[in-house]
Length: 284
Image (cartoon, rainbow, N blue to C red; front, side, top):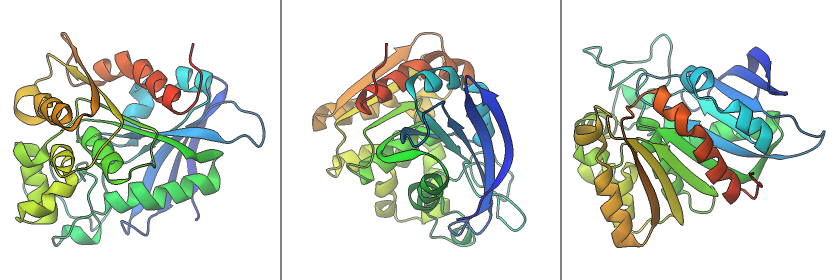
């Protein structure tokens, strides 16, 4: 599968690259970033996937996430895809709102026109991009973890729940845990999947757990000063559902932190160490 290097920069002894390719899943050109830590020739390295939130691209975490130093120390490949298809002919929210359309793909395969042609981020993240990564980078696909922020936290948790055994661990920063019950999710799922709420349950972490999907453990960090906490994020719904299902949830409410990359970068190392332990990597 062909890809083009957009840029590469040396960082902490490794290589931070940005790449683009023509996606069969979305029918558009897609851009993503990959950090490859220093390693011995021929070595295969574990992979951490990071899914970004509303309005973001691959660039937000790449530039602000402060993950490279620890990824270099631990030997983790860090992959950050875009949040939605982009380009000429890709439909957007008719009103130009930030929470639907471009930058807001919600990691689903849309079934509703006109979005069904390009908005296939589920297939892109779970099928197409992993194939591209293993073909072009020293990735050990037997050792994968996944994490995300906000809309990307929703994506990371639902992808892990529906792909048991693929990911050694899953974590999230301020995730949308029950999109069927909050305005962001209701708008997106109706627009991409239609009005039948039964179809939404496969992309709702709380609903998936209620329906029997399981994780061995889950790490979530949430800022107490997050302006979206009460209306859109509602971590208490995940907490209650995990407790009822016997899922080991670590939910950290971080006093005074908001929804921004100041928050994410502060606790990024905690998440990477948590993943490293479950990927069989020793962390000091």
